[in-house]
Length: 435
Image (tube, rainbow, N blue to C red):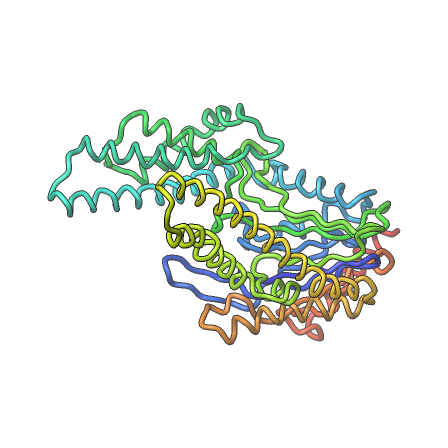
């Protein structure tokens, strides 16, 4: 996991990220504090990128991918930040890096994960029936398998089709990746009795997964691209989830878009873990807020109509039901009013005063604020009983129209005085490009 913050006003963006990265599976985890998550997206232009979630994409480290892209575009300039984003996505879909063979291997690996979770659910159901009845037939196992596979298929099919995809893509994926899905089915389910229709549905399920709005937490990567294009007067920031490339098409979803304008002069965004940033902004922990609202709704607003009607005598059953429904409707409106009023209070008394200050912060204080918010999240993890999934050195960068991408704090795995050739090489490359 990680914690990342982006703060923008009319003159600049400050990016801050911790260095924690978590490895492991099945309850055995190891946390390292040396990951790089902030990068320049261009050698010379005011554009940066942050990564979170899976540190690799299609088996390749994000750091390698980003540096290859940076080398490819060189000193090219684009009019708008969106143009850099499109170029980056086109680069990812280039078959010279993520070949068709690699795409097939990745879909096989993803199928193993999804089919594995289905198999575990089948095993639990079969075990329960055996414990209850002492036996189970092969036909019953087929029925259970079909029910669970169908349930999972319906769950995926309910999700929206991602932008840029269409239902017909599912059939193309099934044709092109039939062997890989077949192999995953055999490797995971092995001798498990299944109907032929269940096997066919597994093929459809995997193809559907590739085009629907569903991303596995263990597999997805998050990228945050921020900065200015040549014609952008104010900074912008885009947050995407990426998963896999299939049929040379990137599975992606735009999660957040913030643009500074004359009317919207400041924003604060957090990515991955950010409950302390929310607490700082809103004046209340998000989990406490959720628990409080849930308790009020379920134990007060929903129950009081029944309690009140129960205390009234002289009414028949039909009259009581009628009164109860009226009271429930009024109670529902009161609850909605309460939620709305509390949100307004937080905006006026907590959020707005902070944002008014952010609007006029100079670049160095934007950077300090972003670093402090990440550090606050890190400190919370340090003093709690949870895993310290946020921590390590905090990298900070500021992107402005005039100064470009500027490092404020940056960790290095090497000593600069012993590796002067790295800096010399960078300057030589820039000088050669200028000539």
